[in-house]
Length: 318
Ligand code: MTE
Image (cartoon, rainbow, N blue to C red; front, side):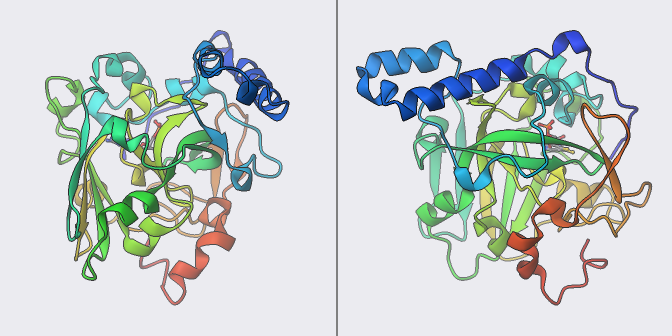
């Protein structure tokens, strides 16, 4: 992956965390007091629209703020991005992704499934209850954030299309439209950007089909209208602006594995003991902090995910 010197966020750009938290607190308190449930539907909708929220999102208490962590700011997520279809600098996607058209949008779910289907994006928003989950997010370039994502487990979609017994992997294909994505002119990757998971990883309850962040629909530069978040893996496993999900028998060759097989593996689990060919993975810089902190095995999700890799040499299957 190309690596650049970090462009730090201007203090003047950081304004939204307290607003976000106070909206959250207000909505939670109002919900607890029965204010929202007790009001006519229109008022509840108005309250949410006023707060810029996605409707009907419930914080999932099992994925609250991890111990000792602090949320990053929405502006940090929005302004420090990797989305090479819009350019390779961290500030290119916020500048260039404004023109991404996210409606109409469909996601074709196909391959080794009994019920292949082309989903309209608005149908996907209703496929399962929308949850807010706070996950650590670790980029392979050794920076990280703590983000409240909105979505639902990918397993809900997988169960809806009923994979056949020979579906062993899931491949994610993302939009590659030259008319909208100036970065496609550069041959940085073999477009479209593709990613993949083994079936048990795809079915894992942590694997989140992501439709929003900080209570709002995803900003274009963060992968609107639909992306993946797999919190124990490096961030590049989470393809942005997905248009196709394919169930396949063989391990798919992903865009980064094609670009640099010695540097990027299929699994890409966060692993502080396996360095990237060009830099250490033992430490990371949390956006908004000075200095470095130690990286955590599986990004801190060992208890939930390690059993999927029992018996595998994680230096070989990096
Ligand atoms: N998806 C697409 N389609 N194109 C990309 O360049 N970059 C990946 C991932 N998904 C990328 C992508 C990388 S390297 C990271 S770290 C995350 O998106 C960054 O997500 P964020 O910018 O929303 O933090």
